[in-house]
Amino acid sequence: MTIERHGQGRQARRRASTRQALIDAARHLLAEGAGAEASIQEITKTADVGFGSFYNHFTSKGELFAAATNQAMEEYGAHIDALTGALTDPAEVMVTSIRLTARLARTHPQIARILLAQGMSHLDVSTGLLPRALRDVNRGVAAGRFSVADPQLAVMVLAGGMLGLLHLQMSGRMRAGPQRTDAFATMMLLALGMSDAEARDVISSTH
Amino acid sequence: MTIERHGQGRQARRRASTRQALIDAARHLLAEGAGAEASIQEITKTADVGFGSFYNHFTSKGELFAAATNQAMEEYGAHIDALTGALTDPAEVMVTSIRLTARLARTHPQIARILLAQGMSHLDVSTGLLPRALRDVNRGVAAGRFSVADPQLAVMVLAGGMLGLLHLQMSGRMRAGPQRTDAFATMMLLALGMSDAEARDVISSTH
Image 1 (tube, rainbow over the protein chains, first blue to last red):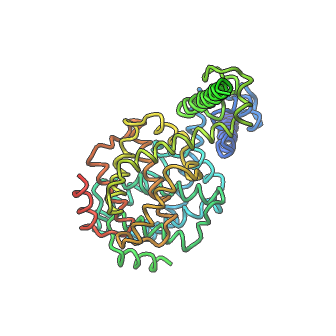
Image 2: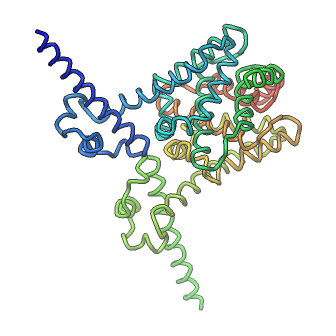
């Protein structure tokens, strides 16, 4: 019994490690912008696992790339959550999340590249950034800090602006230093219905 | 002399028409999202011109796709300019441009698809939407209607938000009807530093 259990444990660990190797390979390929074009052979070679093992874990490339994207976005979301968890003002959470995302290209280059490679289709992803942003917008409205007619639209404006900032930053066309990031965060707070004075307060209180 | 001039005119027209056929083919392929992957053979077949004629007009696929993108974006910009030319208030120009762009998927489906296929790399394009948006932001600042710390950043926020709206609309995930478009335009005017009351005035005066 003990031996069998050990054996099963080892098999489960090996299975999980092959699955993660495939996901890591997919994340690497997504970040390189080669997601859709990569063959299953290229994926298993990058993962250093046997070609046949692919179908033990995923029914299609699409399923693997979806799993890889979700994992990267969840890591990103968890990173932001961990660093904003102690804040009680939804406006401060928003500004801090924006600052962390503006630094993503440096702190999590692979995740930033995956986000950018997805581009606007990131807006279709139901994990990671968007549900958290919607939660934060709704909290801000409930706390009377934001005044937003259409929370889903507000999230889209945040995501679109943020993607633009990341793109310009990673393409080297615009440096998103602290001053520009603050200007961006200010525009977002204004768009969320805060007054100029309120926005300035939040920006300086989170510095 | 007359005959020779006629002959040259015909040759020039034929040359221009072949060039435009190649650009039309590239616009079609870009709108289908097949831009980068299309071979020169596929392009000349779509254009219904001889394979060899490609290099009489363009030195590379990249040069053709850049010309096609620029032409589509210039058409889009000229469309907006024509319909906002009579407006004197930069804030009204902004709202009207946003409304026209929100309708782009219906009025100019190919241009909308080219914009979306480019996604964020549209921010690198120096023709069409962006220089016009920058001009409108600067006019608004000069007229005291907008208060913007960083006009280039403001343009990026506008472009990112607009691309997001187009994406969600064309993917069928969000209807950008008149009410949602107005909510979007309001967020943009607020982000550009207008007060809620000012923004509401502009939205209703442009209806």
